Length: 130
Picture 1 (cartoon, rainbow, N blue to C red):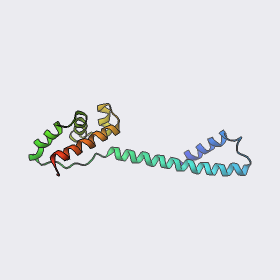
Picture 2: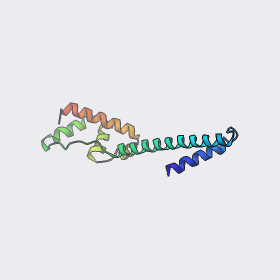
Picture 3: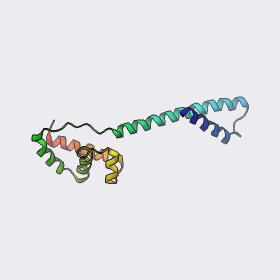
Picture 4: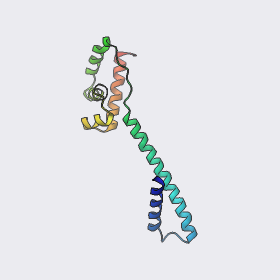
């Protein structure tokens, strides 16, 4: 499918730039080069999209705290700044993905990731190593 898309894109470009391309031999060479460039671009774009989707779909792992520490953990979460607290609650306590939490909070996925990261860092500072 990507190869077909690349070839179609190259043919469209060939039609658009036909006046600039000289002889038949030049047109064929130009078409090969353009199709190759477009194919590489499409593969890179798809790889980046798959990587983004994979990273967005996996929640950050966190160990379950022992029951004795649950009171200290809840107190530490309650002491977080409101946006960090809400992001941590949605992702870790309610099990939402970063995209779902972003939609619930009306923020971008990157902002939610930053708030969660900062919140977890503050929790580690307050509670010490697990």
